[in-house]
Image (cartoon, rainbow, N blue to C red; front, side, top):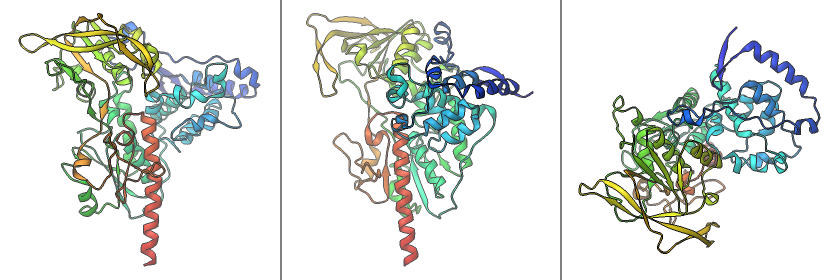
Length: 505
């Protein structure tokens, strides 16, 4: 009997059939009985083991766990969870199919709206979106929508049963998508399904954008990203790497010389911010962007087998400055690279941290040391300009600021020096400046983000659209995907209109 692995466990087909029959009978249970089912926990690596490897932390739901979790959904008449999803996945419907044991049906249903379920199931903040508004969550733990989404994505890949979308007939129109991150990929998928020829331009040598260079292997295995990209290739989408739009070619040249009918800009926000304190030019101080790119994309953790080294972490003290998901990724990566002490230095308390609760929890379990209500004042180096420490000051929380979080206020006389060998700055990113420099008729905000009509994502330049972090600033994968889908729909409507005009002429 054939078998395949899900959640790190071998699952035989006869096991699926047996368990499915049992669950099918259980579909007739009452709402009260559904509510009595506890949330099914996803198996995970032991923290003491995983902090020494780059393998995925969570092992995934087994089919039995997935079906049991799906049974917790009471199939609301008004599924508000759909409204909580930026791409409006038909959550109630795909979960119902899982409960019935129709896993491929669930794959087909979810891919009507989300082309990257295995990715989104891993990295999207469901607790602040679909799960946050789950009706069951008012008195109990919400349905684990994210875990079920991941299960569906993994099932398609590991079972070998590929679900490719239906494609409209070719329209003869050609669209350029700049950037192969979440916004670009989502936009490209929808445009291809509409029948347009789509070419995606990526500045780096490997596709995936932030999915490849920004998120560590232990949170999002790169093989999964590559597999999802293969699905887009099967749709006829063309990818061109090592093309820096704004340097290799401009937007105007794409439209005038290569005859693209429309352009979508999804270049993200990859320009790292620094803190502007003394000593940031010392050897051993780097941005989270550089650190994670070297490790994730260029496999610096495997040096000297890989070509790109990263600053030596083994046996050293590493401090990451920031409290977001990227900061958690960086500090957990440093720990896996052998750091003796891996610190998070954050100016507010844990309650104000923007990182997902799950990521904070994982970091704590893995031995990350949190230095909260602490701000860096100056990096200290030796005569060779090597980083040796950071001068810090303790803080206390005052009144809320513009972000709604309580503003940190310095505590007089609380300065101290923390000995460190490496500092990673993770306080946010700015926008890619190349588009602004080379396409002056695109309007930018004071924060250097592209100004768009939020209903269509069209920029001030006709037939040019934008979405994702280049518009919103740093945000989530699923929000970027939602923007990509909005833009694709608007582009399709625009191109259909021009085709109609041409026919009338």
